[in-house]
Length: 371
Image (cartoon, one colour):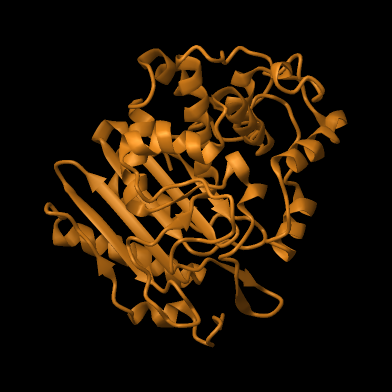
């Protein structure tokens, strides 16, 4: 049996009360029971400490619920309002900031990287748009070695300049810009630095003024320190010791503009709809953002736009960082939103939330999904 810090499996803790905050128009009982059964089965299969799920489908119903535990040491139940690290969903915030600056005429997505980083390899050929769409050809700074070191020492100092330096050292492995779509975090560390240089604000200040406040996101922010303003803990399964390791505290600056942001279920509900409908951008800019291309070697129904992941009919993003795995997607045809967070992500960086997303969307939107 897989054990927690207290010697009990998360499956054994599923008897803890589910904290449900279904809105005034909840789903029919059968639909709620279906969601509940899928979540509980997935938690047992994947040994998940805790899960929060939100599903909002206008005209059909709404469902918000928390399952399992937030703290394996104390047994505290997970709460719907707990704040968590959203990892690569942060890329959507960074891209929105860049596109807002483009709408303001302060930069162009056709600008060359050399405007800000003249010494970076291929900077005279890589455009801002290439960075946004994962088509820059730059190498991934967060390779296996970096992630292993991060896992061992999650509070170790690390800056955006360190990430850029590590990526630049791999210049020999860069590919030609705008040749293929290859997902790398380096793109969004560079974009974060561009936002800060053009706006003359740090990333959190920019987002607070131009993204978070306009949308009323009161529980979302870009952290610079390791603390998580929540009683929720994030865990990583250690196969060697047979227990979960607590990775709640870590240095978010390694993820930076590619993955540092903290949010909540409720804020992501509001945000992902605004992200995918273009609330904060000019219509032409939003249309360009959604013109995605398939990733190299990936299925054709998964495309990457300008800081958005287009998965079949869904628009949004997912994210993984040690301790947390998240999905936040919008379905335009139904004006529907689904948000999932799991407080587990292991050293292998394999999503612990994607299987639950695939199962729930297949059950709730069987005519829409390609999987």
